[in-house]
Length: 329
Ligand SMILES: [Zn+2]
Image 1 (tube, rainbow, N blue to C red):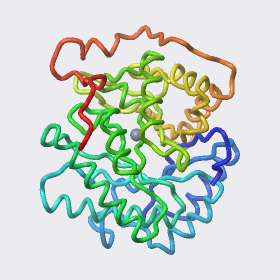
Image 2 (tube, protein in one colour):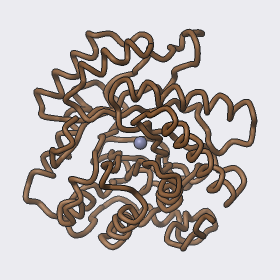
Image 3 (spheres, rainbow, N blue to C red):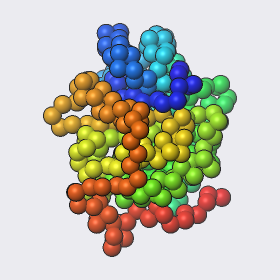
């Protein structure tokens, strides 16, 4: 893994499951190599436990995952866990399945040499208690990881929908207290009304990361893309300059000025209605890389589109992530 490289940028590459062929792995890895992109997130989004069924794929065997990992050795690799995982649930069956998926993902992640398993923590059930619940469940995984000597760790993702757990502060805090990573999906943070349109708002987040996450051990995973957002937060991902105009240039400028690029790994998650092929995803990631490598610095967020904050200004659905949340006891 290119841990010593100062900038790590890549794309969500391909589904990682029972059907992942050497052809797709080779096609993606040679393309990334040719474009000097050095990171990739492998997607276990719709994998089922056990044998493939109902048209849905299963997880690759440890052996197969090892082989795929060998082919991706030079890249910074991560896994995206299935959407069925929920660490917020109060349903026993759902929790059992979620634990089984996460355990499977952690093993597969280890076998491919991935640093972490990104996943969506789940819907917000039970108010503030949900934060404690997610933290405690993450701690259980960390104990398992320790017992089994695994290297990959969970990375709950900052959610884009306001009805989902959690906002930047909550997610950063639960990860810090459990001793794992979290994934800062910058577009999600923006879509739920987080203060990422000002330099101050972004700087405040960098301080929280430094405070809660062990950056001497890991880079913080970042997802970056355009996004379409509405009153309830994320609607869908979009190209970088599409949707509601995510302030990605301002964000990258702050990372540059704060020497923070060497502390993160960036996966570009842009999506387009028309084309989501490899060419599009690579082109979007290269747009980030070009900006990073340029001398350009943007100190302010400029947009001609209606400000997202209008949705959050006067009602109780505002994502009050600048309020000081109680520290978990
Ligand atoms: Zn994401």
